[in-house]
Length: 438
Image (cartoon, helix red, strand yellow):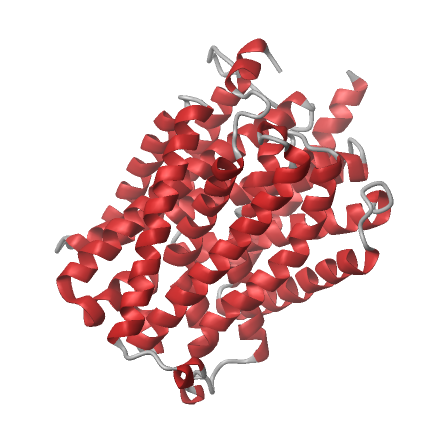
């Protein structure tokens, strides 16, 4: 890492509050506004509880990351965990790159969500055209902010996270008050759930897990967090708890305000739709405003995290890199590449397909993490084997169910995702072998 990188990304430059803000910034931006409608489409009126199940599975997954990060805090984050588990191998490089791609996909997911919610303020035809246009504009703005370094990112993440969490909680409590919340209402009306299979519910869980994967942003920040051996784990746990409470409150409020058919019809902007019967136009403006803040902070945090991760992968000689005539440090080059890929995804894929690809890539990478820690690191990091195996099996069950559901409803995205995984694996094997020969 060159001197400019060291100056911009110093050890201890992110506080506990700042790292929690980064984690929740990614999670809440994608989870609530982008995925709520997608989860409801697969699970009916039980979808608020799907987010609780997703939180539980994510907690099992977080165990591996916390244990290794506590023992070996590093700005390499997931790449460091994989390399310690598998060495400098094709598995390490491929799984790390899948995680990076999953994070870039997340940026596209949130960017399109930004476009979908912003358009609710206007009566505009051709929404299919304007959603990607607004999404691309957000990605460009987030790119510009990210070249400023940690301090501005940390401050903006803290401010935006506070605004959006407070706003979302106000929305949830207000919506619950408007529909006369009662304990009896916690039991969903099962009459609308007759058409959902067990596989469909598992597919919904896969998407809900994607809503929590932002905790890996904290892992990737590594020793940039103050007292990392203590605060990385704390940051992950606090972020997961905050998001679990927020997700459930909002999902329950939306479920109380709209029927499942109404949620599915407005699945790309379901919170804005739920605000109309509860609060009228004022509620709509408030909800869209919070969505804009949430998605902006989510994209900023995600681009920051993935640029740092891919820069570290380059430094570790795990992925190829070309300057393409650009000057400056590698991390800034990565910002350009990441923004370009995210823009292409935003233009050519809809929310459902973007979310599906992200979930598949993330779960495959996550399984590689758990198996590597179980097989090669559990004694070094003092991890309990049964928890690691439980996390691995839970991921496998969820991924299998999700592939089954998508294989029936949208086989194209399965073909694209599996093809991408194969290409990444072959490409990484070729790259690593070429480096050995040279």
